[in-house]
Image (cartoon, rainbow, N blue to C red; front, side, top):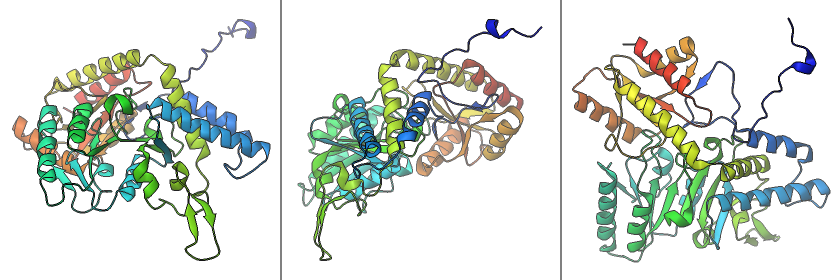
Length: 416
């Protein structure tokens, strides 16, 4: 019989870190774009009736929006441990943030990266930058960087600036990089360091002071705030000395009648020309606030249990090979890339979606040098010559469950 209205069960209240989704669809592609957290959606919905200009108007709507935007800047900066003197500049995403920093480098700067980086941390840097080979383990990364910086400082002009650019966690394998150790090496050689935290921040606390990095770049769409905002946080001097990233309204304090009679702003406004992405900033701040209030250790423990379940299940499938840069026990976040022997990766991804309602990624994951190397190494390690030229990636996050992992493993087993 129908349930009487007065006895119907009360729906469970939503929580800030609940994620939005479509019933029946399994999203294991968080590393590309994470689903929207309830905190972000609620913050945007609350502000939308008030939406108006930022930094431009005297009306109540504009003043409220300006306050919300600057409060978001403070919240995001606090969440990532911005220090006195650091700028918090809102951008579109990590790629945009790193390109902004690339445009702000002093003349003659050499950038040192590893070939294991995402394209966002390979392509923005000037010609003459140094790309180190993929290290065999975290300790090798530290040694290789120390050797490279020692050699650079012996060059013809050892006083020129040097920037080290490194990921916090690989978007291909999920393996964590020794950021604090790399920062110590960089600073010992009077170099600065920027951290691409796009994949690390959704899974673990990231603090500029604790890691002792000079700059940090993050994408909101990977941090459960898919409203088009990212952030660059870091030391102010290079940013204040650089030409504006976007020349236009808001980036100036004075524009005269003559063509070159312009006084550019200092601070974040210098690089935030045009109408800012208010809703993106507010959404990102809302998720940062929710994560700050959450039990991050419990979230990490849950994810690691799922990750172990997934990797153990993959290892038990003789036709599936996991990709890795470091050893099998290296620390990592909830990202696993793999290949199915004898199967085209795009065809596997399509079947998983069509037949099992499971969304994963296929391709080279915007990290072509690393992915191609790992595919070749996987063939050498296993002795198999039937591995495809691209890979599959399953990535976990808020809302992932053991049942979803098991569904993926069962689907992969059917392909054997």
